[in-house]
Length: 328
Ligand code: AVI
Image (tube, rainbow, N blue to C red; front, side, top):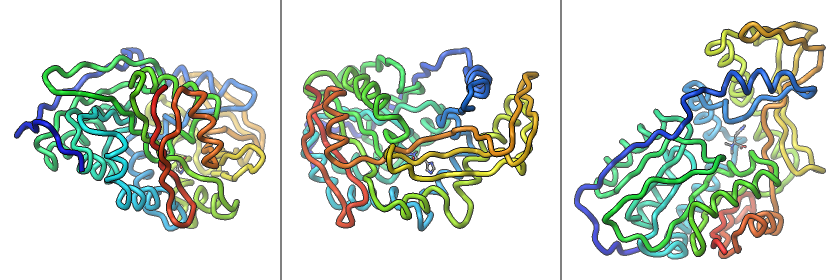
């Protein structure tokens, strides 16, 4: 466990909202549904209902990533803290509500913790519960889209030797490899030369295991995917009939990623905010990819993003990896 130089008895908790005033959900939906391959961005899965369903996914027997990464964190959290070093400001991309984050904070004892997420209420809730568990922790909660260039607020008066981005959950897999390189370049700018990255990455494995993880027997992932249409109905006045679409997910070995779609079961018209969209039977809306990497493949992506591979931790079953890397 890293020994902090001076740990305050009571940490300071602040919030910043850097989201643009103009909500882009409607623009993105209209543009995505107008494309030849209809598309909706996976970041829109996570309204309150979507977050609830995702929490459920994380506990499903078929969905191994969450429990596997958690076990890796439990076993190697102290080594990860050592890799990051003392007085390391911890910047998490994602709300920071997970048990993995708690393990890392417990081990690292960072002088400042900065959760960055697009969902303001998720940031506030996570900060409130972390402040209870770690009353000494300074928190700068930032509501922002971390896939865009970002200047984080300073926190004066605490010693910071290094900045580290923590990006658990294999959320990097929801970018194409090219997008992942771009994302890592942004993360590299955030931490600066000599800064660090601790990132969870799902590994390549048997197609049957992957297919089941994204199309579970209880239908929770299907409900999660379909909730995107329900959200458009709720928030944008859409008229999707959910029973006329079905969840479709499969691992494409050639591409190295899971593809998730919503497939139209009939010829139909759907309206969103007054714009009409036509579907033929079998036509799909592409909603997500989830890339799976070998350690070597991800190391190559990271190098292109400006990070040198350092240490990698993997579970005994070879399902999931966590990489500690340094910005060069
Ligand atoms: C958030 N992300 C890493 C999940 C994944 O595994 O790609 C999202 C998810 N989609 C369906 N199940 C889980």
